[in-house]
Every structure is written in C-alpha cells, then in structure tokens.
Image (cartoon, rainbow, N blue to C red):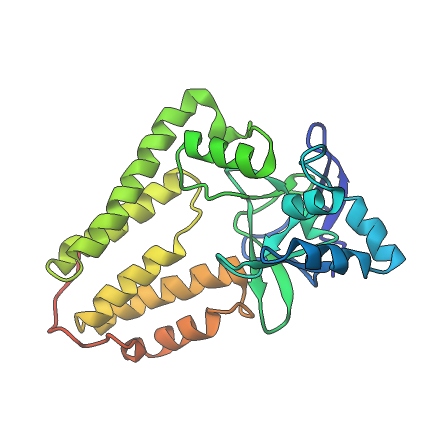
Length: 288
C-alpha cells in the first residue's frame, strides 16, 4: 500500500482517522488492503477463534481499533461490530482492516469502498478531489436517506450521533425533500420502463440531477437504468452514451479491477450485448 497518499493520525473529536498526505484526484485509488482478519455474522464463536489466531503484531493492530460497544459486548465482538466491512453488498461475511477500519464516517463522503473477490482486497477510491490535509471520509450508511433515518441507523449500528455537514439541522429539510424525490424517481423509473420509456428516462435524468444536489454519491445504478432502457428499446446510439457514463462512474467508484467493471466495459464496447437489448421496437429517447 502507498502510504505516501495518506496519513493516519488523531482527529479533534473522532479518535484516529485517515487524512490526505497530498492532493488526491477524483477516481484515484487511495489504498487496496488485504484483511487483518476475516469475520462472519454467522458465527461469533468462529470470529473469536479468528482473532485468537492472529499473530502478536496483528493482535496489536486489532486491539488498537475503536470499540463503540464497551460494556455492551465482549471486547473482540465490539471491535468487530464497530469496524468490519462486508465482503460485497449485503454479504454476511466481512473483514476488519488495519488501515481502512480507521476511516471515519460522513453522510457527505469523499471516498467509496468496494471489495474485490478476485484480488481479496478492499479498495478505497476518491469520489471527489481531496485537498492535502483533509480527512478521508466514507459513509457507514447510505447518504441517500433522510437525516432521521441516517441518525437512527448510525446510533443503532455504531453508537454515535453524526454532526457532519449533511446532518446540519438548518439544511436537513431541503436535503430530506431531495432524498424523498429521488426515492419517488426510483419507483417511477421502474413503473414506467415498460409502458412509457421516454418518461422513465426523464425520471433517470431527474434522479441524477437531484443526486448532484446532495453530493453526487450513488449515480451508477441510474446510469445502468438509462443504458438498460435504451438498449431494450433498440436505441443503441443512446444506449452507448449511457453505457459510457456507466463505465466511467464504475471506474471512479471501484476502479478497473472492480467486480462489475468488465461487464460494464462490454456494454460500452457493444451496447447490444445486454440480455434485454432489442426486445422492444425502436423508440427515440432524445430529449426525454
């Protein structure tokens, strides 16, 4: 790992954290790290055995990590629950990391994280330019949620109240209204895709514009929606445009080594390669 990119040091209020040691560009890989220890939601006993099997050096790294559940859980279990990341979305398997587990939370993150099952590493990519000296922050919960939902989940799962810029009470009402409209657009994209693809594409564009208002996190699924709709309705010129946006968004979030990059590259190179491509007659979606 290239430690010239970042430094781990004390923060004013949130224990240890990761900071940019130089200017970091959007899309840059900050770290690709192998797990310190693998864990699972399936078996607490096996997790304890895995920690016990660590070397003396790695045990020192493990027990230096923050524990949000002091007095509620045994020490090992508390550190794991506080720091483990899933090995992919919704996975019951996870891992704790010496460095990545130091990254603190923000509902307005500047990095994203993804597990690569091929390389067996967790990757951290910058989703914004990060000036030297700024803290590197990820989202422990989805930023595309209302302030109340985020605060509830963070308190329940990590035992803290977030005070980031997105949780500022004065601006939260507008933020929450934006999130609710994004949720509405998501439902409307799906419900309109079969009967009115022009309207569905319109909702995709609206959702993307709304995401920009709250930081731009989470665009990849909407680029995929745009590509899939155009490909299904035999509009392969526009499908190519959406596929290119999809590929670039994926590259920024998980790199070219990521688990979905190869599939999206195929769509970009050949917009007709999607399984639903050409199933419906051509529809001109220009300006939708």
